[in-house]
Amino acid sequence: MTSTNAEATGTREPAPAPPATPDHTEHTGHGPHGYSHQKDQHLKRLRRIEGQIRGLQRMVEEDVYCIDILTQVSAGTKALQSFALQLLQEHLRHCVADAAVKGGAEIDAKVAEASAAIARMLRT
Image (tube, rainbow, N blue to C red; front, top):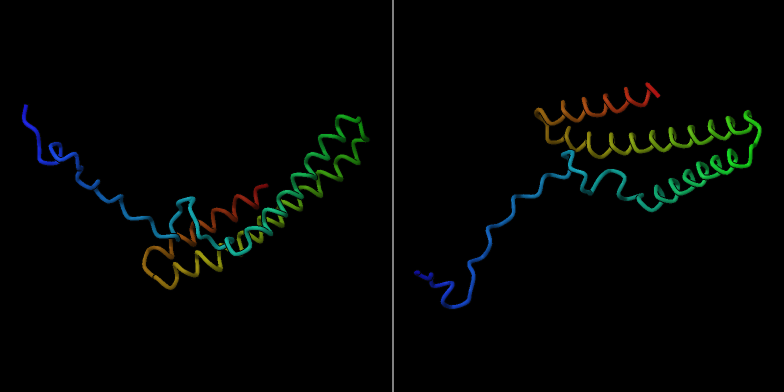
């Protein structure tokens, strides 16, 4: 059995470098994103919406009148829609604007992505 110099000295060759990190404007799930500068406010808002939803659960458990529950469902829905619109606005300002500066096919992809998101929001 032959041994390499690295095995004999107990050292290892450095691991190959990981692939380059994707550009932040790509759809990767990793920041920074347009909403990053307001992340704490967004999380606070989402926690409030979560509280509204938990309130709905309590209302059902306590046999609250149907119309009162529906009123709260409407309030929760509006809160989520408002959050979604703000997030979309930040996406347009940050991600789409950044793609426009870069030009090329990337702007077309970002506009198509935003258009699809708007279409999904309108279906709800």
